[in-house]
Picture 1 (cartoon, helix red, strand yellow):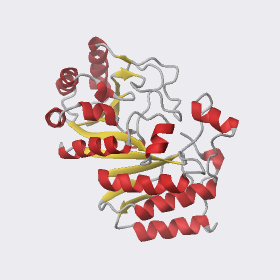
Picture 2 (cartoon, rainbow, N blue to C red; picture 1 turned 45 degrees about the vertical axis):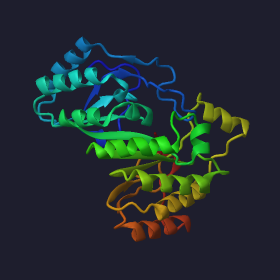
Picture 3 (cartoon, rainbow, N blue to C red; picture 1 turned 90 degrees about the vertical axis):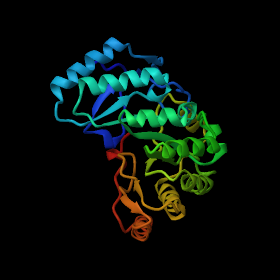
Length: 289
């Protein structure tokens, strides 16, 4: 497979074929993200993609799902996406599910009929990074959309019948906006009504703008107890029902994999135990991005 630069996929796509369709991220300005800082965004040529599909057909004949990398494949023109989806169906007839990252800007740029057409061609899941529901924080970290636009994008994905997975980032508001971040994020998630919520924990990456802010003392990351309180507040105020909630990414101190609202009382009790020091946490040396 022709992989260029950092190829990143969601944890839940560990068992998927990874097909790199774009290189880098179309936005690539978020202050906290260092994944593609040195990588100029570009689109893979059709013949390169075709060759990778032929390789996948011969080496992964029993894997029935594929993840399209990198940061925002949905930015591609609709006709080109349909052509790629058709090539996947032609070369990998056993693949039934296609997944990809999509930011709010690229989702909003697609019409509802276009998203429905992509679903008809196999797209069954979009991973979307909310990070925070607080507009001040979204502006500070240079996301390309505000909370209203995030909700609009989410509703379009849901109306197209596509599974929506949304990521939030613990600690991204710093100590000053920790409570506001938790409450506003829960409120926006309730309006988005995703199928899955993934909570990751901010880990500063050297060379990023946010890491520079931490070194200068203009941004203070919440400590372990502060992050646990933030997570508890987030869970407590999420009211959307029948949503898969996961905080089991390698960056987190306390692995959580549950169903809300069904498991909320149990999860809150678990977090209370962790805050009180009665439950072991993942040590820093074992945490990773």
